[in-house]
Length: 65
Image 1 (cartoon, one colour):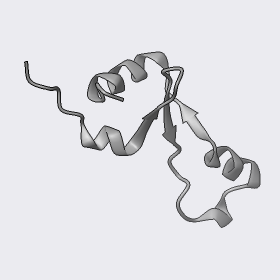
Image 2 (cartoon, rainbow, N blue to C red; image 1 turned 135 degrees about the horizontal axis):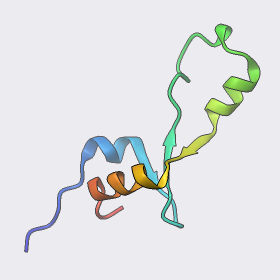
Image 3 (cartoon, rainbow, N blue to C red; image 1 turned 120 degrees about the horizontal axis):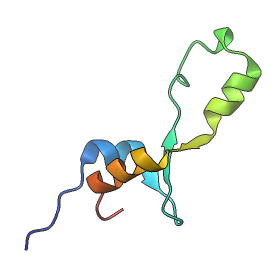
Image 4 (cartoon, rainbow, N blue to C red; image 1 turned 45 degrees about the vertical axis):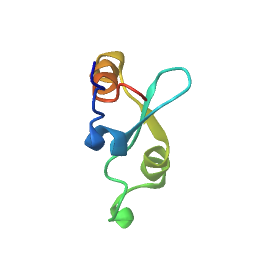
């Protein structure tokens, strides 16, 4: 039986935590920080957790994660 290939696009954007949750980096955190207030910038620095429905799709793309 052949191995399942990992989606390299998903592997670069997501990480799977020890508890099985899927972590991601927020968008809009690259430039134009003068237009964003401090609380928004603080929230963007944190890693996000995907919802259960989206996480299942990502786990299919990353079978060995």
